[in-house]
Length: 432
Image (cartoon, rainbow, N blue to C red; front, side):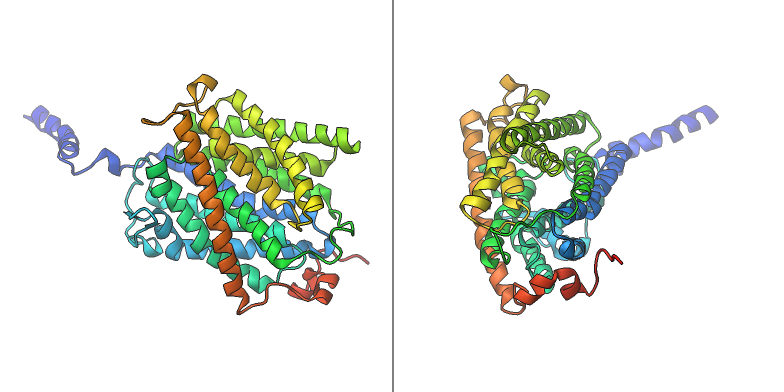
């Protein structure tokens, strides 16, 4: 009798499981969850301190602190808005394919486990929040030295709701680009880099040039800080791309390997181009090349083979390097820290190359059911083109709306003295 009771007690959990009292889908995997939490920290590290040091080293000393404060403030306001409304717009239950429904305002009514994953939806929301905060922060490089701080914060807040959240839904949240076209973006070549790159170019055009551009040399005040920032970005990108597998598995490992290889090759090719064209291989060139490789491989990191990732690195350097010269020298557009030429162009190229290199013929993971090279190519080009167009139009709307309340640009005297003092009343560096 005792044995029978014991056996019955052991069977109770199994019976409850079979009856749906406890479902496998309702139980998160602790390993996957831990990886996503760590990846979230990696992505936050990319913004603060990675991006702040990378951009901060590239500006003149009188604007270094302003870059840090702008990135920090953008990250803060984007995080608050993501919890309040951004997450539900991007990842709420699908409602027509254009925006998520309002089922998760203030992160209320989250599901226990995010659909098609083995992680809590709260962990998924956290990870996506870090993407939502770093994307507008990338645009800071386009307007350094001349954008008014209040305008920057207000613009990025509005931009996150009108540009980032809808695009994230279209591609990652079950929206129309993914479901109707089959557009793919593993970790943000379209959602992050295309939106930020195109919008940065638009803002640079709206703001106009810095005083003295392009005739006056505006050299980086600390290439050492830029190298340190690039190193942090490089490490953090392991979580950015690897975490986008949403599991601690082979997909994550493959994405990280591809991420690293693309950065390595792009950095090496970039300094080789520099050595050939200007006679010196610079630290800023190495750092910029690595970031170009990282941005270019991002949309395809989990879909391609390591050999393809190395080719992505070659293409990133070969295309983004002359693009910087085109934008700044020939077109004389003052995208100050090359946000469009590196992030925007890199992300768009990688998103389109994905259509070819996802093929099993190149060692890729293969096309989804009903897709082939031609269809995938059309899907990728359509995704890039539509998102670029939407980003440009919505950016103009956001920028002009905010400028009706807060002027976009500081005065000429404020720009000359430097934003550290005129906007924040402090200096980054005090020397006797």
